[in-house]
Image 1: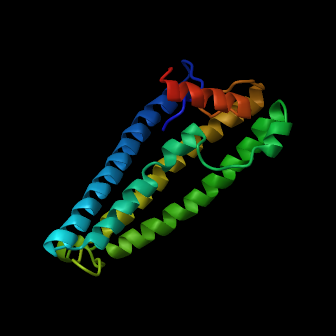
Image 2: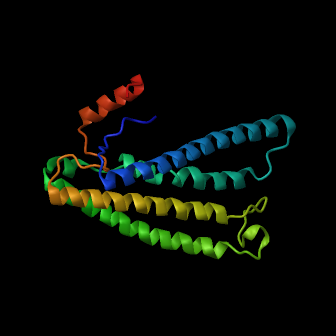
Length: 209
C-alpha cells in the first residue's frame, strides 16, 4: 500500500531530474510487484502439481532465487525517494533549521559512499559470472536446472546504480537547502510527525489524493 508522497516539486532543474528519475523508479517498482505476483502464481502451480500430479515445477527453487533479485532490489531507489526505509527520526525530530539538512546531508553522503563500494563489488561478481564464450554467457549456473546466474547479479548492480543516482540528487537537494535555509526543499522526503504520517495513511486508505 502506498502513501501520499511528502516530496515537494517546482520548476528547478533539480526537481525536473527528480521527477524524471521517479518515473523510471515507479516503472521498475511495478515490475518488482508483478514479479512477486508471478512468483506467487508459480508457487501455487508448483504445490498443486506436486500434490495432484506428482510433478513439481522443474527448478522451482532456482526460479525463486532469480525472482528474489528482482523484487528485492528494483524497489530500492523508489523507497529511498519516498523515505520508506527504516530510520530513526528521534534526533532529527529535535533539530530545527539548517541543522536538520546538515544531518540529512551527512547521512545521505554516508549512504552514497557505501553504495559506491557495493556497486564496485556487485559489478565484480557479475563480471566474474559473465562469459561470452560460455553457454548462455554464464560461467555460473543454478544447481537444479542450470539457469545462468549473471542476470540476477546484473540486476543487483543496476539497482544499486539507480540508488546511487537517487542519493546524488538528494545530496544536491539537501546541500542546496543547507545553503539557502529553505524550510521545505524539493526532491527529498520531508520529516513528518506521527500525526501527519497517520493522517496521510488514512487518506491513502480512503483513496484521497
